[in-house]
Image (tube, rainbow, N blue to C red):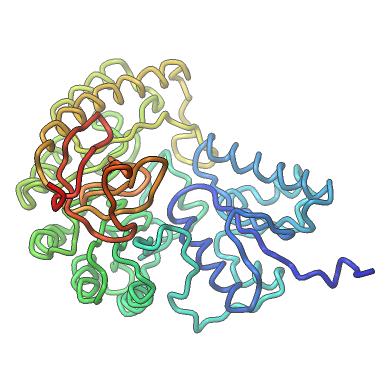
Length: 436
């Protein structure tokens, strides 16, 4: 009879949290594949690596529940080993080791070589840009920096990810070329803070120069910007966006709040007047630009007056895309010294109010798209529809363009001109422009 030790391990990587974690899991899987390990993503495997999120309460709860689920499978003999990595593990390792001791080992966000060693693999330095991508073949995330130097009062990311560290332009171009060679057409640039890119390496904000290098990569047709910070935004980026067809007229810029009192307490380094001026400059520099933002409601000492200011501003600015979160009281952050004094029910009510306003804005903006034709990338077929996106939409968080698969055929992974025939608040419906 074969003993357990002779069985070939299949390593299942489970990813929780944001796109940065998706990227990190892909790098881990690329390293494992280069070590001739059998590796799968969120499928059955006898060795499990859980890449956790530790950002806010809901994410932490999901991560803990996932760890407990796989520990139970281990105890039942369904899996042999469970390893935990990522932000939750970085932030709470001693507590986790004490509370859930049946995990084989915990690793932090910068422990990749040690994690690989525990999995019987060597860290291969020469694997620049070699990743096992888990997104649809036509797009991939490109992480241009790690960590964050911003002092935001509510945020625990610097505790988990450390100080800002930019990746050199040459390395990112090499990675982009390798992704393009695999059929990737859209790069989604991610970092905790895109606008800080280059300050540590080049002594200046260098996002515009990076974009000018990436647009030269053959095969890449769209480049999308995620997670910019409003303070110190490098305005030369807008010039590149306006002049380079490959750079999508789109930016994700989490603004969090707009009441001056709340912005000051959040340590955002800006004001309502400065932020409004910045957004006006964006729209003036790049006509037709899509601005996505995220907001936090229920921050300590947020009064009804603060919330009214936020609501009125959302109505005034008419963001093309917007998400809203309730405040999460996080240990070891500056805001944790404040009393979490907004009741949970009030937080949720305020979030719902913001999203109702945004839903109406989004519906009105989408109605204006009916009859127009947009170049779309087709991500997948789902049920009775092919699902695509315009350059104004990012995967998972924005509008989707739905094409009736019973009536029309479009090729997944390709660009197609789609005429919009109908629209709801968060979805567009269309037909291939050539079929008319």
